[in-house]
Length: 563
Image (cartoon, rainbow, N blue to C red):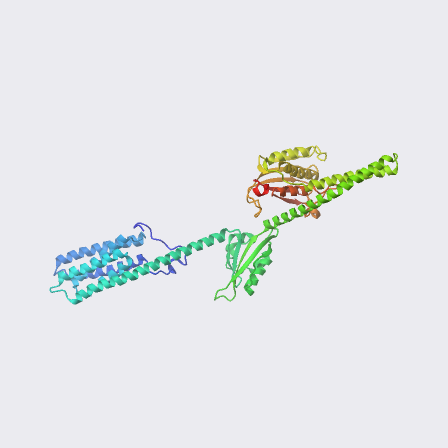
């Protein structure tokens, strides 16, 4: 790490920062602080010693005093750099501090003699910097200490170097070897622990990020019924303020919001029971109930009397809605197949009956009862034939081709056609809104969808405006699981009386009509045509507030659909 780089600070997300962090080695700045304190003590001792020897050896005392002052200046600079500027100590900086300490110890050994207690300070210096410095620099410090001691001994000894001297030399190097080996192992252990701490912090951050951004709600309730964790999605789904309820008893509130979720959590706390795939309803203040899918798991620590329960739940309104739409499409497909079969089976005998009755009516005199009855039968036969044609039309709804289509132009043409319909009087107000909107689809089928919806709206609006809006739908509007993201939205809205409640749930079923004389096949054909394009139809209606049909169609025709 560069000498000027700031020292790393403990992260707030770690377990208590430096107060609870356990490390294999003390921090370098702490070790240097100890060395600075010891150096100050040595400087004081050296200055006192110099004062005592000033009268006998003023020249040496003067040089020693200068050396001590320089050492104090370097100590002050080191303390300012490490503690005030909070710079991480580099290897060169630490090596310079080692040279200063060796100089201070050498002065004491020089004045006290090689047979004093001061040579033992070399051992402490070698041990300390063997921990602080890399192996090569530590070897240099040990060799330099040995050399200084050797030079001082040669300068101060009057006779040959004895065994105690060589024993001290051996001790210096043995201590260095032992300390170097231990320091290396401690550094390796410290590096491994630091790596594990960084990895643990990364995993925790990733887990927190996932829990805070997933589309599922996650909450944890401890064995005492207190809320231990609540992610933002769970707070939004349940309509809770996470900060106000966190750490507080929450079971009563959960029972009000979602009895099924409350029951699953209570079953986990009391009996350790887990729920793998459950469903429930959420009731928030002022909102309509909506379904959720939920699962729970339990875990219990040794100090806990009851297990904690973690619940994962998701708003499944979209999937429920799509499931209902698919079931509706499947029912219509079955009815279409049956309609085609029945229409073919009835149409031929009906044609024979009509032909026979016409022949009988031709042989009867004008005004006879037989002729009146024959004409009635022919008229009703024609009506049944038209109804059978509608059945066949309904059963043959298929998207036969996929080509680029401007839905806005299709809607404009369909509205222009409906405006000429006999049931669309001059007072009818038909408005097409939006701009060019491209999609891939069957133009004839899409024209039929718009025409049927607009004609129904005109018949229900009784002169009120009918608005057709075509635009691109946002990705948030498309329910999850729809199978497409880029959607085109077609909306047909009227301000009529709304759809009666008794037929709203069966609106797209064949033969269900809210208009006297209607066949009830128009909306069924719309449903089948939209389904043929892999889209879906939604309806919103309220008494006196009008009706809105909203259709979402994929902007791109998928390859499997074309096949």
